[in-house]
Image 1: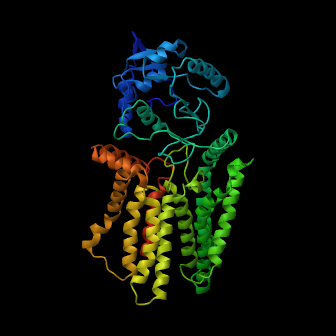
Image 2: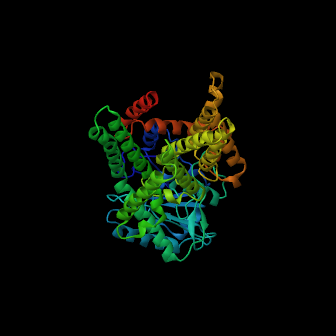
Image 3: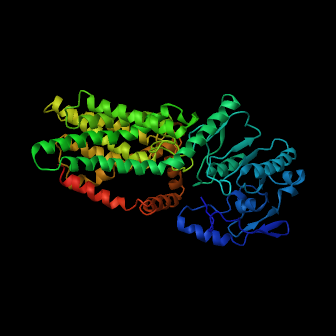
Length: 524
């Protein structure tokens, strides 16, 4: 969670001092990182063993104390011997940065690694990784290889991602701590690396390369997709105003019909992109064409079904049916590992690393709106089907809400904090409205904190009953109980506030807020 003051620059100079070393720039690096509120635990890796040897400037930076001091240091991997490798329980080696093109520098690093492996003491756990993009190259998923006791043939796994073969940089330090027989310090991000079974090596490599191919498609097309989606949706909504200008009833009816059809097709795009992942498009020759071709096809199928179904004459029928379809697809996907969300525009990016399971940040709005609109439609149907029975719409909304909240918030499924906190009060207000209950001011606070209360319930379950699912919720509870919850809360608040200013689309936020307020004020 740390960043250099000069991104993409060379590593800070390391001054040898006898058998150790010192990094003069360390205090400057620490001060620079204070603005990001990520709270790195400086020097933690170097404190996990009583004796640690750092080899190379990158390794010195990895194990240095907050003062910049390194106890045992060698400037180059060429100085490593079997004696040095056996001296300390932990040896961290920097084989140099890969340059672009990667093959020559990777070959040189491989020769050094071969010599190191030959000199390793028996029963040593060896972890090899390239933690960043090659200098001058594009970011890619990188390889992590672990060899030694407990790690035979297989794929690495980690509870932090729940995706076979995918782990994160923040998993490395907790793993080293466990391997050294040390407890994982409270508040540390990530989880321990474990191994899982796989099929043939060739098939496993093909799948992992396919995942990286999908990530490259996501990086190169993600922004363009949302730009095109926004422009097209705006054009479809503006066109009927220009085509059917006027105040007479017939023109108003045509505008309304066009808006309804265009809105359903626009709202079908997210679920269309998720369903595109039913086919492994990333293994084909032109993966981007396959992805967006499949997404367009599914969008047309789902929207046409919503507009042609037996509910088509109802006011909310097509949109309500579409929203329930979207909710079902996302909810079932979350319960089965979030595979449909990987590397699609509204989904999860492994390289961006916002989330690796559950409801993605960009899909959360789609999920919550789909839940509320779908539940409202079913509630209205229940009201008409059972007039005078207030419990009917409440039960309909409650069943939809229960599915949505459990799928997104249960620790073993989505473990989504924000979605749980936001969705529960909205569902309670919707049930009260359909039951004809007026929510008075004295209910404002209980309703407002209802989602927070459920989140804490899920968090306690995750912490005290890991079998229910190890998640960030449980980690947060542990941090809170150990007095370290403030760092996480500060980081989350800073991140959320930062989203209002970090992109060129930030100006759209107040525009959308005003438009939503106008729609609520004048629904017609």
